[in-house]
Image (cartoon, rainbow, N blue to C red):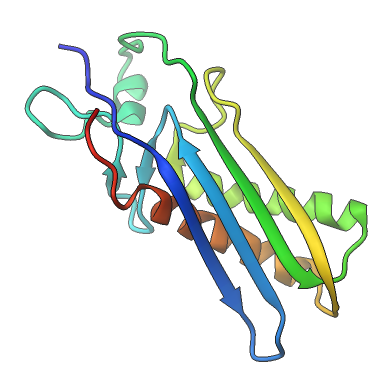
Length: 154
């Protein structure tokens, strides 16, 4: 029996520091891979006929090919911060935020997905690129989790 897919969704997460610096992520999630919580437990993904998660990564690692070619899948993430950064810095922050996608989705960036992260600076606050990039990865993971918290089997 082929696995039944789950619906995706839209999620949001934000971290605000005591100094007023904010980092916000919005995620639109419809991934091929399973969504996992911080402990690695699957919280959304394809389900087998018995109602259990099919565990896409485990199946692939054990040598099973995909049962059918997925279509129309993607996870899009937009990171916003009120800290001021150049275009080059924002590009590196977006690259760091990709780690949050890797923590939350397995597998991620497949040929069937259009996964991407954008980052935008909308303020004049001062903060280090390393700090904001690290926070961006965290809010990315949280936003993806929030996007699928109400997923249903479709």
